[in-house]
View 1 (cartoon, one colour):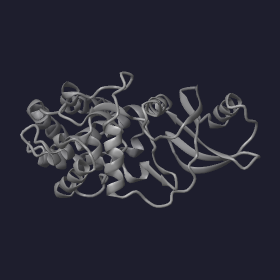
View 2 (view 1 turned 60 degrees about the vertical axis):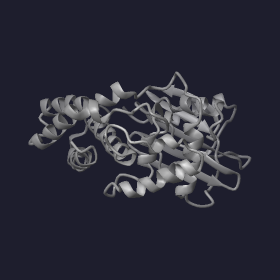
View 3 (view 1 turned 135 degrees about the vertical axis):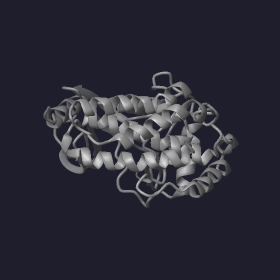
View 4 (view 1 turned 180 degrees about the vertical axis):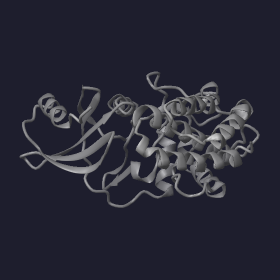
Length: 302
């Protein structure tokens, strides 16, 4: 499917009562793109387009805005050939990068927001299914004669699946509610007028610890001590003290990092088989999955 961004933009401009705009790419990849638009009167807006499964962000942004979360205001949105287009508020260049204290402040606000029934739910029963869902993705990949020689991946997922019920205990202990799911410093925009949270394409209702575990990224080896400090900063900033409560027989930080990595593994494998479905990407995805599974086995003490 070709990217229909030009036609989508025309539709959005019509909806917003505008005519033309100069387009400048900010960030573009195979499944989505972000552009800055400049109108003849020199005003600007952000144009974001994305295909499934990122095609409900306009709903999440409108919900968050209605509930008082500082997010970009959606001016218009439209769907065309399976692609979502959003025209939204532009905050300009950031005054600085977000740091850990900014992250905890934003997380406290988001996690303290009333939950929205429209969001998908990741409760304990759903969390438990992640390793088995990953095994189903693996079976489909193998059936397509991809991801061969992956007995180690299957073995790791089997072990995690057997331990999942015990290790997922405490899923609904607070903070349980809004989960941003792409909670990184790059998703927090700091301007002269305060902060705004961006990138709500995969928001859901679930354990807020997954957000806190994702803040420092997944490229480095998971660091439970660093996350423990972050969790303590979160509580100091007004987050629930229950964030520090052990769960599933593990410390809060090990539980959070272990399940966040398992959540990422299932997502990578679903992308490989369903959304990206490009054998050329298999080596990179398989490498990431193996690395994360090693971390999951260690962190969840499987």
